[in-house]
Structure formats: C-alpha cells, structure tokens
Image (cartoon, rainbow, N blue to C red; front, side, top):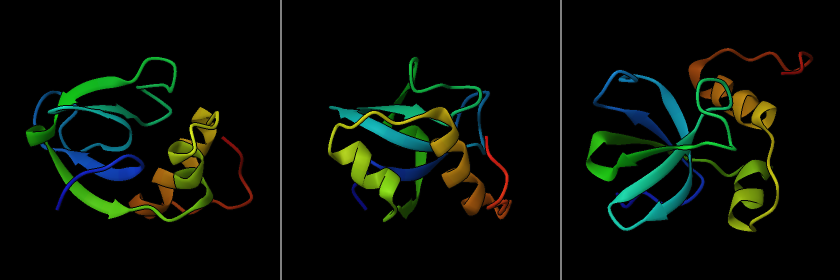
Length: 94
C-alpha cells in the first residue's frame, strides 16, 4: 500500500525500530515522521519510505488537520498513537 500524509507507520529499521509515527509529509522517497514525544512536530524525523511499515490510515480529526495544513500539537499526536498502541486514556491530557 502506498504510504501517504497522515498515515500511521511503524519504523522497521534504525534505532527507533518498532516505534509508531504519524506521517506529516511525503518528499519523494522520504517521509517526515513525528510521534509527539521523541520526535516533535517542530523537528520531524526524515526517514526513507522502505524503512517503515504501514499500520493504518487514520481517519480522525488529526488526519484532517494534517491534510488541510492546519497546525497540530504534539499532544494530539501522542493521543492518537496511544490508541494504536492500546494505551487508551481519554480523560488524561498529554
């Protein structure tokens, strides 16, 4: 499957292997990734497309904001990725 903006991916290579990220942008064969904790929105990780695995096409409000070029926060990223890890804490804020 083609990886696109706002998809959830898992790193398959490097020291961040196994971590989940949100795709903020696609630049040719490179992706800009952030998770809101180790990689913030302000300084996303640049990683080759072949070094990540597709996890999900996120259909939440966060995905709409990323596709619409709206400002997103690190806490929104952490909250979204926590649901894919199984760490659901709806009443707790980042």
